[in-house]
Amino acid sequence: MKQPYERPTLRKLTAGALHKFGPRAGAAPTAALDGVAVAELVARFGSPLFVLSERQLRRSYQAAVRAFGTRYPAVQLAWSYKTNYLNAVCRTFHQEGAWAEVVSGMELEKALLNGVPGPHILFNGPGKRRTDLEQACAVDAVIHLDNADELHLLLDVAAGRATRPRVALRVNLDAGIYPQWDRFGFNLENGEAWQALGRVVASGRLALVGLHCHIGTYVLQPKAYGVAATKLAALARRCGRELHTAIQYLDLGGGFPSTNTLKGAYLPAADTVPPLDEYAEAITGALLGAGFPADELPLLVLEAGRALVDDAGSLIGSVLANKRLADGRRATILDFGVNLLFTSFWYDHHISPTREFSDQTEPTVLYGPLCMNIDQLRNSIALPLLAPGDTVVVHKVGAYNMSQWQQFINLRPNVVMIDEAGAVHIIRAAETLDYLQQLERVPAHLLP
Ligand SMILES: *Cc1c(COP(=O)(O)O)cnc(C)c1O
Image (cartoon, rainbow, N blue to C red):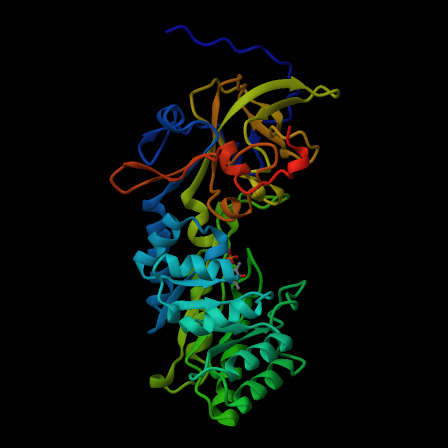
């Protein structure tokens, strides 16, 4: 077969062919996802295209359950809806046994429509409205209190109800992670959390069932979780002693990293990110050592988001054009940009070509198709000489991109899920202009 032509380039040779830590990662092609050819996916569903692997979703979930469940007797995962609330993704996790962790009235409704029983919904978030609280009470979801005004509002809502709404207190604390996330929940160290707990119990109108903290996201120090778990457990024991209230669960939140590499990181994340087992060890070790009687250990709840879904998502895209920047650098324009890959603001995603190339690569700036200067996916990436029409796969994009995407100048593309038998299902159809304009109204005087 005739080899495809590649234009020659001049390239400065840097000393040695090896990277400091071994050979450079090659541009090995990704020709298929879960056994389905990329070319077939693009032919059937277009480009760009988000692809979710049901097998990987289940694997990641089961690995998390195993990491915590083999170390602690009572563990429950609650799926963080905002990380990816496509119903097929949520329902895969619910089928595996996950509760729902929601942060808005809209997410609460989504979880209910996905069949999650109210008592299995944990309602976080700093912006709950009165109607959200009323809805949460009506279905007996657990409300994770964020601030004193919300507490007052809920007490008012609770006054008109026959049963006491169930609540947990969101606590922020110093776990050694800085800047500290002190904008969510009540602070532990300054006494605010304790004061709030006193008010919750003294009101007689609320049932205090849990304590919650979520110390950050992409937290790379398992030890911080040990500190948080120790502090939360001590607070729970104090509730038992001084408020005569048994705390049923401790929720350590999410924030566990995926193996995506942060921008500016020296080494690839796959080599540096601690495995989930280390987080599980830190948390469960702290709880088991906190002095609870063996038959009174609280349920351990976790709200892992990113760590459960990032690996399961891929984004297929196509090269639209190549060009030279004024300084001579090679630039490639893809058919997806920051509109679909929001996480490119902080990750250097692994991006693969989908067919074989020679070993020749060139540092390339990757741009998206938006007419907007910030639409740069990568400042510099070593890629083979992709031509217009060539496709690429961006790996590990399952977290946040499908909830934070924008429709700025382009419609959102198809999202498919490959099931465990290899069948491909559309789980969110490509948007149409009709869909986009459905809610628009043109005043009569602007019509012809
Ligand atoms: C976003 C969020 C999560 C999930 O966070 P990850 O970093 O994706 O694991 C969990 N709990 C709360 C309260 C959140 O806001």
